Length: 376
Image (cartoon, rainbow, N blue to C red; front, top):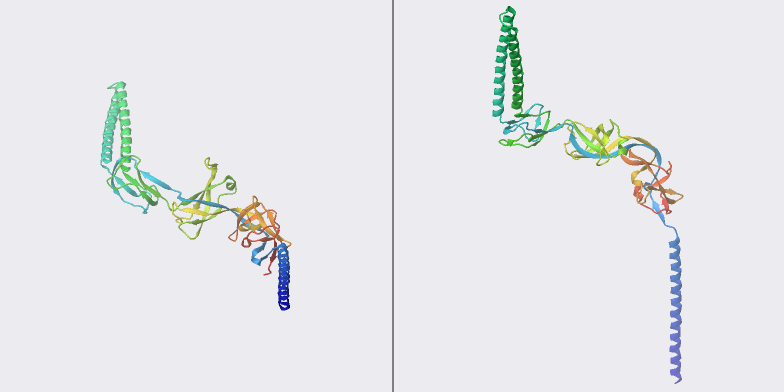
């Protein structure tokens, strides 16, 4: 009995020891967790420091840029024409096709000449008859003048011969005019190129019956090309004759220079824009292709900042500067925009030469963020 009681107390003692050990272990684990939580909280309270490389920052500097205006437009020919038929007729021959080069005055299309040639011949014969009538009236007038001088007839007969002569002269003038009209109608049966150029469109075929003013062909002078651009009124105030634009064309991988040759004095009522025209080098583009580029309008001097370093996610544009190890957002106004050594820059306010700014590659960083700039 006594042995049984001893064993019982031993078991109770072991259980108590295990409980004490478990409680002690739990308390130690809790203390360790609290210490780790305090360490984590302390780390969260420490300010985040961004590490930046030397390429992530730049120094604002004073400089001069070429102010530019972004432009676009369609290439067109300075001289272009849609040739039309001046008379009705059947097409007898077409001597050129699309893409062919033609010279000024070259015959392009021939219409039926039978009726026009007959009318020209008729007018020519009427002119001959009028000349014969004039010659007869002139001889009669001269004869009557001789007879009047000798007293054989009265002056009344001379007046009548003078009237007949004047009538015959007027008839001759009318016949000559009619002959000229008939000859022009005959000439109009041949459609000719008004200037040297290239055929871009043909509208007729042999055997087709044309009406008056029916389109025949399109001819353009590819040696004189230009581009029409639309400018805002503010942009137009800075555009002058002789300024040069650098264009990118669909048909070429090279930059093409174009010069401002004309500026419209009126504002387009529908778009409130001002049209300007830039001449292109001969044969440098295709009529109808699209062109984009930059027109250099002058120069501006001030503190220069790359355009891609100016952020626009706020109502006012701003740049990111670094001062005393912290990022600051500085609102700026863009006084001028242009290019420096082929790169886009802007002249801005509120930034001083020597200020340290974040470049575009640094991305967007919240204001008051601590940064560390690694030495190059």
